[in-house]
Image (tube, rainbow, N blue to C red; front, side, top):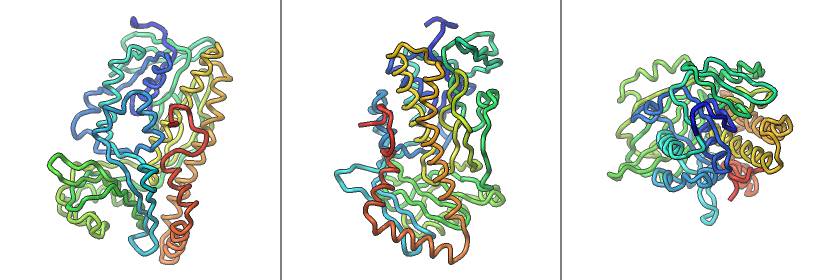
Length: 406
């Protein structure tokens, strides 16, 4: 396509959710301008982002449907079970599916997800990717939308999609109200190398300051064992924890791990980000849809943030595909209203559930711990309840979009 041609969509934000949307839309013959401020070389540089993502069963189906399965599979580490415990005291829950049910999801380094998405996007003729691009004006009119870039380019489409993440300027400019609060906690992220194999177990250990998660990653080519650490600390303690030398940091980590992975032999670069909640009053406006963190930002306690955004992608693409089949304008208010109805309530319920879990496990004191462990013991014993939690983790409950179904 020539520059300035009109596409079906203008997707503002070319991160994990925005680029997945462009590729998923392309499989249905829907063209996109993807506009992103970042330099993709920076986003895929070694050491840029030590974060990893838990990709649910349903989200993995989406990646396979858009042709990324072969590129990503070599970097996947299956989550064979999830262990949930209150300070490693008795009464933990083990979510372990039957062998025929498959894993509970897959862990991927975010860098590998970006590399696969970016390579596919460059090869996709239905995507015009405008990288390192600054938007100086957004317009949403009766008959279409446009953005003007700092270099003078004017990009046009039927629909604008805000996919820039939590601080979405597109959402702010549209005046969409948002409920939000901070948890006064910060997540510290690091890669760990450890002596014992993790056996595909993801650990969620709850301490009074917040959850301490150990997520299984693929073994190194030299046979070394690796896990991703997501450690929640009080905001007031975060700076000091990040400044600790490697030996002191590892001592703090090992104290909380109780030897489950053996000695920690190495720690990768550390990074951190503040934890907060936000949810928009609406995820659509005139010729505008929001996806991913632009619409809803949740605590990483259940590892569902990215998966929630990928459900948005599947639903929006299905709504657009049906509109094309019926000969409707993609930006028609009825089309966007269907997306609103489909995703608004589901994402809100997941957000409320993760917020509730965060608050429940954050209540200090021995009595609260005893009550939590009693409840967890009940879940451990009730098969159908455990099965429901495992299906939630896989992302296979509710009204799933076609791209997320088997």
